[in-house]
Image (cartoon, rainbow, N blue to C red; front, side):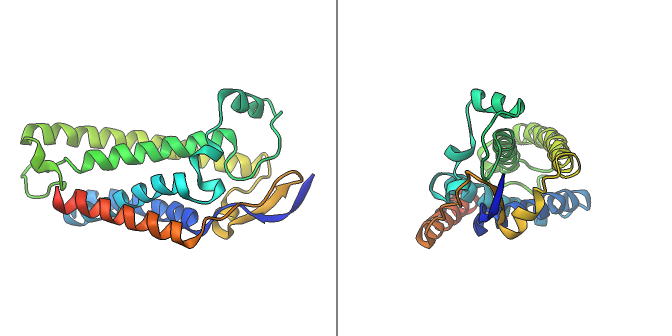
Length: 215
């Protein structure tokens, strides 16, 4: 049975999600129109967001923590067979999907730090650590990972529509409102205090500044 609505996503997690939704097409477009200066700036914003999410995945609210949604193969198998108990946050497959998406974003952004364009006029902040030929090779890898990421995003969107149209489970609304109807056995999200958010944001910002301007 389905119980009353409960909180399942905190505001930082939701803002991260929708910021990524905006940033990915913005990064693609700035590359397509040759605004590599803006592309690099947006990439640095992406870096900060990823670092924040990695930290928030350790100290954040209960449903944002990796330990709460990266479940073992047994749980995944039971979920696929429809035998898993009701749960809040990511389901076992969705949890791994979100984690793989985050890893792909991290790899894509990390590669971008070392990339330089053909003229050497626009370069990632760490491109000075390697030679030009290596930077151009990583530019190719950067593009390849982007297409892999696009494929994964397509699967992600397809899964959302499958849940919406076939299973009648709207996964989009909770990422907007933060709440959804919970299984009868479900418990509300345990929120993280504001000081943890402040620490995560400060650490992510400091690391981003160090990587992009000090190294």
